[in-house]
Image (tube, rainbow, N blue to C red):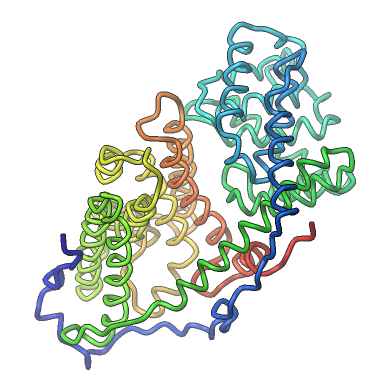
Amino acid sequence: MSSQISTNLVPSQHGNTSKESRHLSKFKPSFWGDIFLSSPSQMEMGAGTQQEYEELKQEVRRMLVANTDKSSQKLPIIDAVQRLGVAYHFEKEIEEALEIIYHDHCNHIEIDGDDLYTTAVRFRLLREHGFNVDCETFNKFKDENGNFKESLIGDVKGMLELYVAAHFQLHGENILEEALSFTTVHLKLAESTVDYPLSTQIANALKRPLRKSLPRLIARSYISIYEGYGTQDENLMKFAKLDFKILQHLHKKEINKINRWDTNCIDQLPDYMKLWYSETLNVYKDMEDLMSKEGKSYRVQVAIEAMKRQSQVYYVEAKWLHENYIPTMEEYMPIALVSCGYWTLTMSSFVGMEDSITKETFNWAFNDPKIVRASSTICRLMSDIVGHKVERERGHVSSAVECYMKQYGVSMQEAYDELYKQINNAWKDINEEFLKPTAAPTSALNRILNLARVIDLLYTGEDAYTQVGESAKTSITALLIDSIPV
């Protein structure tokens, strides 16, 4: 089937306007230059290194399946494997270990005497993997007045894990809201009083909680932290370093290829659309060529339909702009959740995934389920909050901030506060969608979760996407430029 996108999405009276006055952005020159166009350095992985890599992998696997006196003794190794970014090698082993831990938890085996650290790590890992554990397990750390015990303040590692666990909360879990407030206050005080690497762990968590952090960035930072503790498993440490180096090299090669895509002009379109349109077609053509060989061309067709819908809502936004119309939130959000691009990106990101992503998965995602809507909400509202002032200066459609201010007659700060509440609720929606039984494969859910994490990275406190802010520079450099010693 053809991957051609209809040129009739935008009405013809607006289609041939190469001389039309256009609102331009004054973007700064590229911070990166042509660094990603240069060929990535070759990573030599000889037979000896390959053998060592496989041996280390098997050693880590043995650690995960080894018998222990208590199932909770597996928690630290599972946590480390995940934070170091190598859990994708051991999904079966981790799932089986957590099944046993969950069974023991439900049957109250070795639970009552657990400390805060163990309780919080177990709760977080089980929630993360879809086990519906009860947050009331943290009630045992409260005093007779219903407050978290003051004695917990001295357990900095335990407080840190409670803080991390609290970000896996669902709607109505007030005890986790209380835990978040309690731990945030005391971790800020403790950060300057504890030694490295715990101080760095606290700083990283307060800046961006684990639930909102991209796994590859967690791995890059945790390799140094794990090594800093000095008493950790050397085999796991070396395997994580080798694995990171291999993936970094692969990612560099992919970016190099992406930067070398050719462009073919589409003559009948306005000049300002030619580059975008032709590049879009090339992307989907490349996808279709690959997927048709595997009998999965239907995947590309769904992605194309998503792009069509996104193009259509761009026209609605353009109409609002030219009419100087500020829509209500009820009008704005259905359009803005598509125009932000995350619904389309979700479809496109599924195209090359494994066989567990079926036609049913695509149909589920295409119909805008709660987790996709939540991820798009986080994207749209965080982008609007940090970018609306600059966008208004250059002539842009009204954002959620202006829409909310006008509709409810509130100040800008009051609008911010309400939109942040909606963002927080969207994260709770995402957490709910991971509970078993899930509506889609976990690999699909993780794709959607990671899109939300990208936005949290790029739009917390600044628009680091439009102008390549510090968070973007630091993260991209750490992942794709700086090498890691092995």
